[in-house]
Image 1 (cartoon, one colour):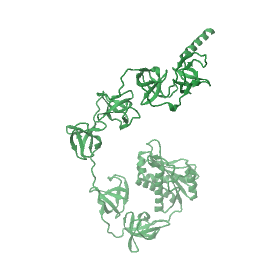
Image 2 (cartoon, one colour):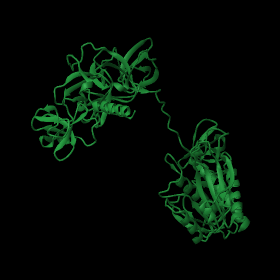
Image 3 (cartoon, one colour):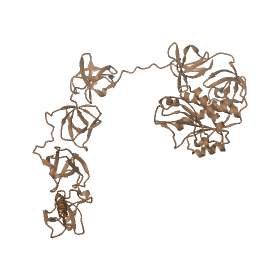
Image 4 (cartoon, helix red, strand yellow):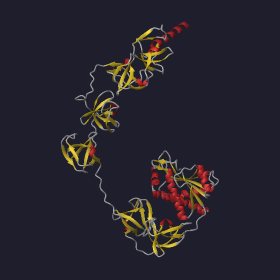
Length: 634
């Protein structure tokens, strides 16, 4: 029994041994013989001679020992004397075909490699019956020329075919209709190194004819070019013609056929509208009545001729009563702001019912019946009070910050006014008309300011942009809104407000907490914008920390802010007051809250976060919530 098993094993071993080793070792080299060289079945001068290679024969070999090398022939390993093989450096191997090639066809799916070795890198695999150009390399390998470069393949899987090579364009090629499946370079020759004549866009219709397995001839304006076959799909059915409206970019010549040398049948004047459809990459069909013509597409602009809008006449006027400004041309649109009676404005007429109102770079809409052109001629409109806690208000000769200063007024000063103009109130000062900034007046006498110090913390900054949506950054939004909160609290309530950062700088969480303490704050509010990887999440929310030493008052602060913010921003979702142990509100030494003004990832919230008017309302909501807390505890 043991004898039978041994005999079977030896039989299997002999069968496998007879098959030979088909994969060479990793370290292989190219060389040539310096003499007629015997190749043996083992590394010994007494070894049987398998074949004799002539002098200067190319060989693929690997190291064996100091005297012998392994020679790879027909996918098997043999041996030869090392001293009679001269190595060929990689730089000496040409990648450009300069040898005479033969037409052939693959007899199986065939790997084409970058070197004549089974361990050589596979450049691509050619399918069975693919036509190739090749030249002999050695007894086992051939050189295969693809796109003007030389690669290698097993000789036994390439069969020569008897054809008459011709690179000329056939006089009557079998022209097919096709369409591009991607943007495609059209070249002067069938090679990736060929000069690009032009690039056609995806879905362009082309006329083409077969050239070889990889390239096709593309016919443009009667001339032949070349393109990769892989990106052209044949069109077997008639493509539906899509007619569109366009107009002439300049006087437009209409031809009888797609040739600029053909007869010019008609000429359309510049900006003349027409109906047309694309014919190919260069030409379009123009439809005039029942007739069709051809013209170059580059002379047509898609769409209707733009209507030139008349120049709007801007008028100086004033509000005859309280004037509501809308963000759109509708009384149901969002109310952006109100102008007081007799307040000056610049406007233009839309129709008998509506006007456009210009304030800075913004445009609003208002009812025409409530505006009068010219300047108001009235007596004193009432009493106002200067509101600059701890400071004085400049009095200027004209309604401009660049106008000459004629004096100052103290905080709380009562004074009559005679109208408004360009953001200024008109007053009498030393018997003459003068102007003070409307941003620093109140209609009621200012009350004594609180001694509370409010710390505002715009989140992120510097190298930390926070949440991002395109070119819109969280750090930019929150810095803008926080500055508006600061200005509102100072101007309306005279509060002492300090910011952890007022420019685009980066602060760590620890630095923000330390800044609040060093600035001797009594309460801390951190401003942020939310984001998620889904667009459905939306709305505003305010957080306080349950682990804070000031958790109870922090909850009151957060509730006041959220309630007032939701009241100001009724169009946004109210997500309420929530708890979270964020660092800046957990480790602060004072009552603290963190406000999320909305989701930058939400298309709905993004509309508000981009709007100056909405940011101002957000700031006022946050500020009023802070003021309510201060009035309760300070």
